[in-house]
Length: 327
Image (cartoon, rainbow, N blue to C red; front, side, top):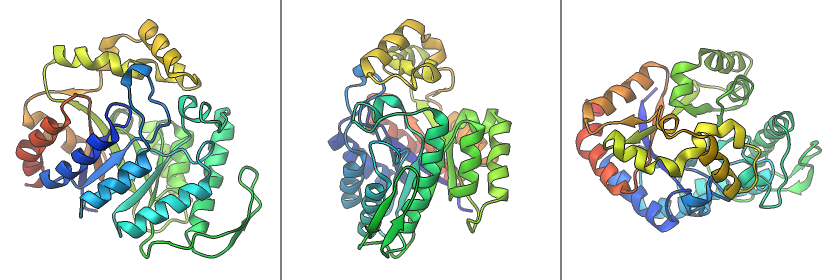
């Protein structure tokens, strides 16, 4: 399977217009894809942005011709009904043939509850995600659908415009139960670099799911790698905007981004925030880390740049990293 590298479009950190510009620059620099975070609220109030990812991807598709476009990840189980997700990504697939993927996951309260979608415990969320994936695929077949599901019963629903080439669905997972679902129902698995390389039990769960899957073909394994082109001191200066990452499990059920920020500032050590960031100005170190992810099973890596100057990151990779990876 061809190895690919993408760039993460962080809707929490940047305006939609700037992300569209970055997506166009990423294609010119040689990236293979752009991945968009899909949020209603940012994790923390001080991140300052939360544009609609689907509209950003549509605009990015119009400004590019080659890069793959998708979310990492959309939650199709509360604020986003799976029928609307199916319609949106079918339309993206029609507009950008063969270039669209849908990443899905169980979500966070900060995005789902404030938008009126509700929120539930993990067993409820994983059950709803299973139903949502199956319903989305059924709707993409193009006929009228009656679905008597526990969470999403619908009658006489049809997506009239469906792409000729199927949109792959990748399931996000950092724990064993979600990874098992990713293996069973997904066309691939989205995870963090630290999980892929440092949590063999999660990888094993993904393989268990794949063993009972009816999906054809080899699955994609997509890994997100945090990067910062600069010094450790410069990384620490931007770390407060991402402080929730040090206490992510403690704030997953927190509905208000102001409260998430308060908890993060109270409990999250900045050294812990940057612990799994690749912080370096040496292109060889970036190449080595990405090659390590490929060797660990990743077929597709997305670099998630935490710095404010995204164009500088794109230039750095385009000039000094991507050519080495291609060789």
